[in-house]
Image 1: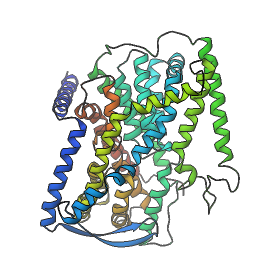
Image 2: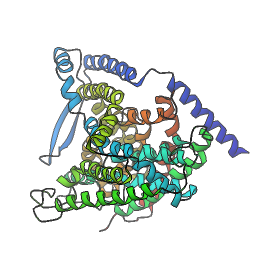
Image 3: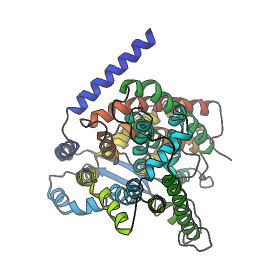
Image 4: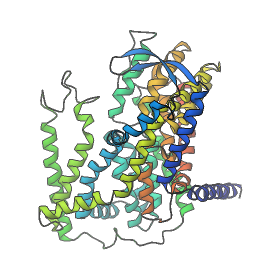
Length: 510
């Protein structure tokens, strides 16, 4: 009885959050208001002379730089000049725009050709409904190896997969979003971002011990355990909290209808496999041989900050193009090149509203970065934690929380670490806590806030996905949907980190 009462209280709280959140205007209007707020606050803090001094690593020179960050006003001559002259560069330099368009070229073709629906039907046929969530969440967690592809590909597919078996599509979408965004910091595979994080950590380590360095597998053991924990937590939250709150799906069940695959669909899948193999062979030849274009030009490495890892979105797009073309021509859903081009054009045309929103978001991000307010807030919170004189375990927990809350203002994983690493890696080392532990703690604090952060570049895309199934959905809908994941991921993951450290378990090999 007590558990049921607690459950209903949580549901009421989430309903209130959703109602309040959805009373706010269109996301584009929200960001325009935020831009006005940032402009006003920047001038106030500028007049107050708000500034901080700190050290940060230059990832290009690997040198520690002394930096003084003052809040810059957007209402000064320089501020007005910045706002009026950088609108186009801000938009063109906003990575999410290019990633969304490039990724959706392949995904859109595959979807219009019918490959996506057929694959989901095949998944439904071979997997039990109970196993569906586990499969989607595991794939979502592992998708971080392909950088941002999970946001663009898996999340909408998870919604359709749930819809195909008569379950609420928003439950599938939420589970996939939690896996892709909330557990982004860990993987059982090496991710493109790992090389940069390790490089910054090593620069911080060398302030105290030039002979000590971490390698890319410094958090491997902890990451494997984290993947297992995140899988269980996300599935339980989905099945016990999120899906019951959404209730049974009252809409149509489309992708899963029709029973077994037709002859044309089976032929299309065989041809899609041929397309995937052809693209795989091409990229293998561009990567594996010595001196191949996608190897690092100096070291010859494939993993790390290399052309191959930096081109993963193109690789993913190529795979979807190969699969989509193969399926379309094999199943007869595409008759010629014009059909394929029209499929891509239709997909990109559907992104018009999102691209407009990203135009506004790109200005907000650029203006916010110009003011230095996020940097000042991060440094002040870090200074407070540094001076708190806590023991190593409470300090680790406090560090995770600081990273989590700063992540709301500064979603990017690398800039935060460039600020925090020179402060906290040496501090924890002096307390006898290894730098691998600090890096693991940073991963724990960074990821869970992604799923409830409207400033996260792909949050607007998630709102768009949700509106396919709930027309009146808004930012409040997504936050209410994802808040249980953020809370349980942060709590359970922090407990795992502290237990792992307290038991003296190695965070990685060596």
